[in-house]
Length: 346
Ligand code: XMP
Image (cartoon, rainbow, N blue to C red):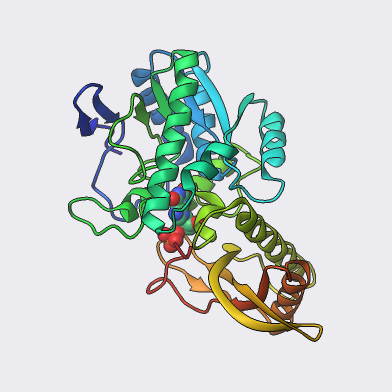
């Protein structure tokens, strides 16, 4: 792997943002040899980070593997942060705390829920949401970094993040919050040890480290904001969160019952700002729509919708409309592959 420095987006005052790992190149990388990769990246990180650094941990496999690598390389410099955006899944902040405790890594919790919701007020365009969230994350990191005198930000960016975020040679499919969603001006040097890897390779590393998150399904950095189409209010996000939770529970049950061979690669619900007429008891209802999404994939670059048995979909639909009937009166299932769709709806 080429570990040349590549500088992009120089800013006038703060100097260049330095990426430690190659920009460009691309193509499907070969499966990593975990031991060789760890040795190489630990050395690369040690060569670059010579002072306090922060790493933002979401509890996902990418940022957790990045945290473990950076923790091996520069434990004396590293502070791990968890930013509660209010856009996480049900119970996730508590689960992440437990996961990191079990790995012996101390996490600083930052409650940023109000500021994310305030920043997102009135924002409905998907790319604008991503850029507002990317910027808000960086502002939170900068504040925390100031307190710690940190100059470095370690991120778990992987290849599909920057491929889909586009550059001069590629169209922007969607700006992943940790790449295209970053503000032009920022005061931190970004270190991205997983930059060239694909999801399955990161999982290989996670298994190599025996991490409890190795098999967790992917969850996007901008969280439930991009599964709540239209305006991102606390109330609408709560509806999305509960619907996602029901989908997760029911598909796990489907595996236990033998209705599905294995859990899909990714599965969730999204709230659509599409209202339709329904009936509750004998009263007319006019509510929004939930779409259920479940896909098979290897690396997220292509995906096929999962063939979920109809009786499982029936259970999901009934539970969602019973539980969220005040807000939702229709449930649909997405039967689009990627391409032409993408996995997330925004
Ligand atoms: P799409 O929707 O682009 O998703 O087909 C492919 C995979 O990437 C995840 N995803 C993201 N992950 N930051 C992330 O860390 C993001 O901004 C982001 N957007 C999408 C998505 O959940 C799927 O696993």
